[in-house]
Structure formats: C-alpha cells, structure tokens
Length: 180
Image (cartoon, rainbow, N blue to C red; front, top):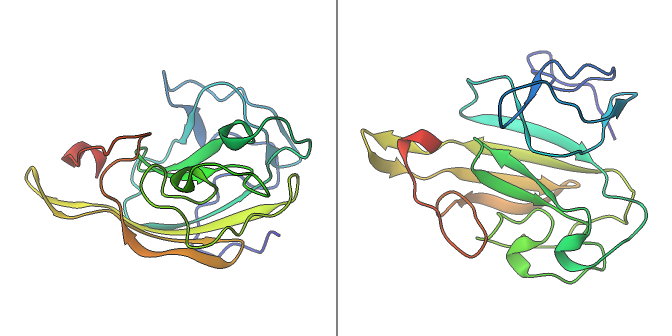
C-alpha cells in the first residue's frame, strides 16, 4: 500500500527497523515493541512520537489487524491512533465483527461512528489518512474544537467533524488548553 511520502513529510517509521522517533508514553523510555522489515507489532503500553510540535497535520497510518481471528467485539485487534494524545481514532478488526457503533474501526472513539465500515479482512493491510486541526483557545476559553477528516482505505468516513472533547469510553472529556 505504501506510496512515496511527500518531500516535506516527517516519516516516523520508515522501511528500516529504526524506532528512534518513538517513545513510551509513560516514562518516555525507548519503545520495546518488535519491529522487523519496517513493520512494528504492538506490544505492552502506549507509545507516542518524540515530536512535540505537531498541531495541525495530515497523518498517514498503515496497519493490519491479526490474521487469526480470536474473540469478538472489542476483543479483535483493538488499538487506536491518538491525535494530540487525547483524540482517538479507533483501530479494530471490524470486518464482519459487530460492536458498538462509536467503537468500530475508524470511529471517533466514544463519540461518532464512521459513515461506513470500510474495513478489510483480518490480516490485510489497511490505511487511515487523517487531516487534523487542533482545538483553539483564547486563554482557558475554547474558541474552536478539534476537527478531523478521516479516510479509511481511501473512503471518507468523517468529513470535517468536530470532536466533542477528548475521547473516552462512555463519557465526553472536557476541552482544556493542555489538550490543544
């Protein structure tokens, strides 16, 4: 699925085995997740980029859920892409897998389901193209919420949709300048 990135892109994981642009979320230490041939497999804990200056950006993510189906609903390939660390786009094996609407693949987790389920079969490569605008504050007052457009496997599933606040399960987070 990979295409050549634009010349001005910041490539966070290239074709090698270099994880230097990633760190563990808790403690900030090096990532111990397995990587081979430029493919990183998920492991324990959460990771984040070492880049601290992302605000408004376009993000291209390629992933595959496990090829062997085990479990159902949220128990199948569950992960997420966290924008600014608090706004989640759900990663899940949603191919022929019934779960709650705002928890399926490409959902704005806990807030909005995708307009369509664009998931491929387990084990097949998939992509998210995410266009994200950070929330805007004047002091502690929210002036504009975070906005996202998401294409899942080339299909628009969210079009300039505002987040209600940071994402969470069964609750709506509160906007604060710290999650801008």
